[in-house]
Image (cartoon, rainbow over all chains, first blue to last red):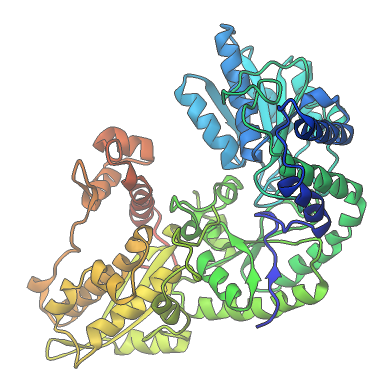
Length: 397
Length: 221
């Protein structure tokens, strides 16, 4: 069998060997609990503090502003829920959150939950290229706005949002600003001063680090209420024994990733090559802006065929990708991101995301470029649907 | 949104039999030429579903002495839809062909069983084949002047606690329901039986598409 061509790094990345090797001894040799009053515990506490400092340096903040968590999702929940619950307890009249229609479910479902608790949620739509319009954010602001939360990079279409500018707007209006930066760390700056953010969520499993660890940057002036209770670890905001091996791996991965940001940019050429070649297949559409997207994301709709069938055919050629089709989701709903671009359901069902890894070669992409037309033409020949792109434009969905 | 694998952690996403029928579907119409030829020669043609729902099916049948002698099909659908239609076409034409009455009695559960089991969330994918057959048979009755035999598709219960059917959803759509919130206000669907919400949402989209945005290229017969 031929080697797997893994083009699904926005789902997760492998752990770099260098990262893995650094983690190992913290499982079996330096296994102490950072809260213990003995040498093993002290060692763990030192390691924890060192990691916190290293991450603070990358984010250009102070080390007591870094809270380690169990995932990007958990960081996001702590930031959004923690802030709003705190405000509610203080009887603040600020009860509105502004976000966008293309956020990850970690944000959208948290907002849904808060809506049920009585908070006001405003979701600002994105432009057809998948980028937020600053004017629309400004327009959504009311005297009750407590928080704006906008993702840095979209996980499906890879578009990069104008975080710095949104941060400025938030600051000017005395509103706190959170960004979900989980998909951004490979290529974008994480300097919280430059980005004008008060809260920023990160995780390790998208940056060649281990799964099950993330962090939240929280500006020291921002007060949160914990959402988990127990031993009071992480400044009382995230109880639970610290995941030292995970934190070691996360820190190493983040340091490496941010150091190699420039190198990562070379993938832009490979990405553009794949986009150009795949768009040669008739009745295909690129989802998301061509320029304002991360170097590793390609998302294309192949009309008249269903995404899951494409994925399973690709899998036969040992190519891993993902789809916005309803059949690949638990909810039977197609991708909310593709729909948010103003595309109809038909286009969402046939959308495929290829997210390149830092190990992807042109040879691998050539394989994709070679098999994709075959798969598409096979599935189209058995499909009774014959929509053309111009048919979609007339459709009002 | 990207999980294809079952929780059982099996090697492939579906049972081996599903894989077999997905990669080598039986009775599948593979070219546009063949489809055009069948449009002329078939005794009955049925189309069900819509591309907006992510599932659409066209079926051509040949009937002799009340038995289904041939069942050809094409689909815009996921792996489960392809595999279950393939299996369904085998089941209704095997051993000299089932009678029309026998064929219409086949349940999605039976198709799933022959395939080695489909995940519950994929059951609706095999329902489409059954509906397409029903519509092809109705077309056959129409063409052979047996109008009295035409039957509408079976009613299916969606909300298992409040016994709300697909017909109820269709009626709500015809009466002007456009969103799931409206549908829920009117029918209380999914309030107690939360498991039916994804299917109810999909049916809502399906009926909205069916009644309010007819596709130019794929007209209903």
